[in-house]
Picture 1 (cartoon, rainbow, N blue to C red):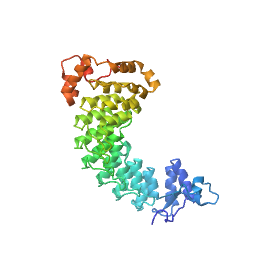
Picture 2: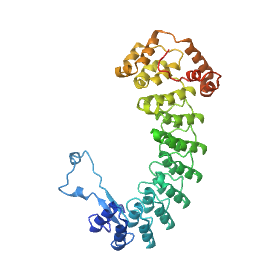
Picture 3: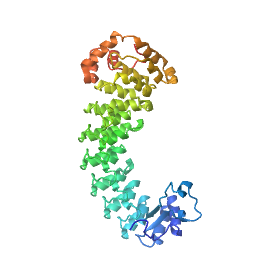
Length: 425
């Protein structure tokens, strides 16, 4: 029977449900326990916390687009049990009482069992009680998720440990997206969760419905500067457990493509140190360098020029010189990147039309650089620059470690590594 056909023991309109919801809203555990123990019909009663019956009323105010049939309304109702309510709110004493009176820990009239609710809330004591009373650690919710899939923050680590102890399958995929608990840990940058699953035998290279491994997911999620340290930790762990750094998803994007798109310099460095293919091409023909350039203007707080510089020093193929106008259009606000790219060639013919690609306010903001840039339109590059290009060509993809080993002053090493100087000579 579906939740829509189920007749609740206690409907949303009942006085009991109204009082129960009020107690839950203010976190009054004593009142919740009193209502459940004295007024709920039985321990496995079905309680309707809410519904959309208001839509059936003749006087209901519906959006005009609904009335003309352009929008559809989905009828929703929230069904639950006393055990699910108390587990969701971490009321350990209530959970213990209900289990003593043989409440079914696997009932899920609302789509999630009490164990799902306890794990989602990070309620370790409730989780342990439920597992001790034979709650199924691998039961899938109505959305196709196991309790481990709901361990999505650091507060749920205790729940995750209990689940695997009681037999939760660490490689169990969700129904729709085929994500394993390791994918979930990777998505949220949860190092301890990931380590737990890997120690219990999780596959580091298991793919989801988008053909992403946990490593691919990690690199795709490392978007915010503050969180990149935790994602780097997870990446290190996954590679230590044998994750393939050159795996690709359904769009043929590698973890390096995703790290470059996010301007995650630390991840880019780590992947390249572990033999990621710096010139991998995705389904749309984009390289990691292209991904970095596409988002550079929107990621300036992450210093995307470091990513571009690192890629070139690891042997990334340079962009086609005639495409420099397109790069100017997308990266004009990041002149350090323009300088690095331009200096990666011995000579690039500068077109006067490129000036039109740079918005006037950007041009004025970085006037010294762009004046020096266009002054080279009819001038050969200096001998020092040509020597730099000759050395870099000789070292190829080994520039990143051969140049720092040269017995020359640090400023000269930086020059050879394409460190931007603010003007072009």
